[in-house]
Image 1 (cartoon, rainbow, N blue to C red):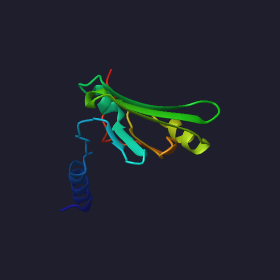
Image 2: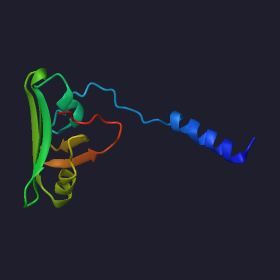
Image 3: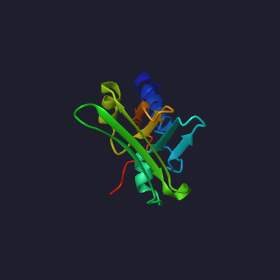
Length: 130
């Protein structure tokens, strides 16, 4: 057997074996409130947008002074609404990387101050449609 042919066969087979995984969750926003008032909210923006519920949304924004505001609303779960604010160049940088197709997680402390904003880009997440 020709060595080049064998390498091509192995590479071709591994391309099928390593096809991209897909996120298959519901796309619902997950809101966690702790007893002390701290908590977190997370969700896949594309899946939320494309999902059947028009009663869920989440996002973050920043202004030119690096003030950050994040919010999540899940009206389907009894009008659960959470938000946090902060003035942080570091967190504002995370907000700037949000796109319609990311997984967004934000956390806040008992005073309602955003302490973490995680933006995850991955090919396994559903793209926003329409």
